Image (cartoon, rainbow, N blue to C red; front, side, top):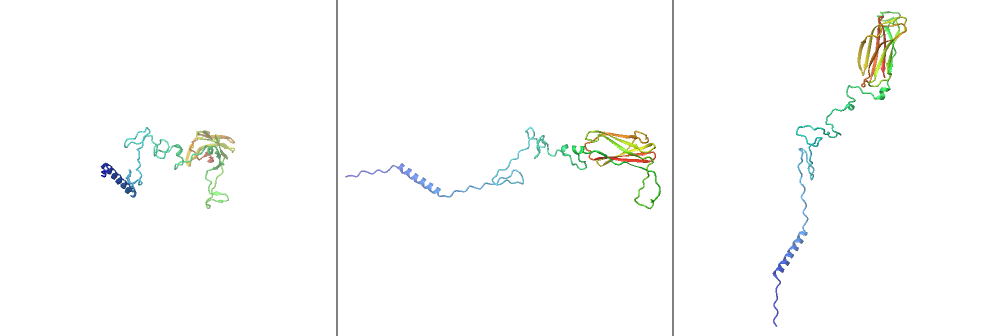
Length: 261
C-alpha cells in the first residue's frame, strides 16, 4: 500500500512561535537584572548672592513690597502706608514714638500719676526773723573774733512771721491756683515794708523774683496780704517749693518756705 504524503506546518505559524519564545526569553532576562538607582538630585543655585539653598529644595521667591493700594512702588520710591516688619498697623519704620512713649527721656522729669498728685499738699515750714544790721565784735560772753563757725544773729526790732494761704489746698494739672503771702506783725510798732523777694524751685530749676508789695506797711498785731501769686498748675511739675523773704525798713528780715509734698 502506498503511504499518504506528510504535510509540513504553515510558515507563518513557525514564525509566530519563534517570536513568542524570543519575547519570553527577554522578559526572563530583564526580570533577573538589579533595579537601577535613581540619580541624586542636583543642587540648585540660590536666588540671593552669598546664600545657598538646601539640597533638593527649590529656592525661595521674594515678592516685592506693595503699597496700601496693592501696587508695587516704583524704583527708589518710598512705601506709603506700608507696615514695617514686626510692627502692627500702617506706621513706617523709624517713626518717632508717640506722646505716651516719651516718658523717661533723659533730663526730663517723670510725670506724676493722678493718685500721686492728689496725695500731695502744700506744707509750710517754720517762719524765722532776724535783723541784718552788723552785730559788731563786742557780744557779751562770746569771743567773735577768735571763734570759727559761730554765727551771731541780731534780734529783730519788730517780731513777726510770714504765713501762706493756698487755694485750692490740693491741685491737679490745669488747675488755677492762688498763693497768698501774708505778714503777721507781732510787735507794738508798725512794720514798714521795703522789699519782697520770692525764690521758686520747680523740678530743680530755681527762679528768683523781686516783687512790688501790695501794702506799704503792717500795723501792730495785724495780718496783711503782702503779695498774691496766681497761675495754672503745670502737668510736668514733679517738685515745687517757694521761699518768701520780706525786708523791713528797720532791716528786719522775715523768711518762710512752703513745699508741695
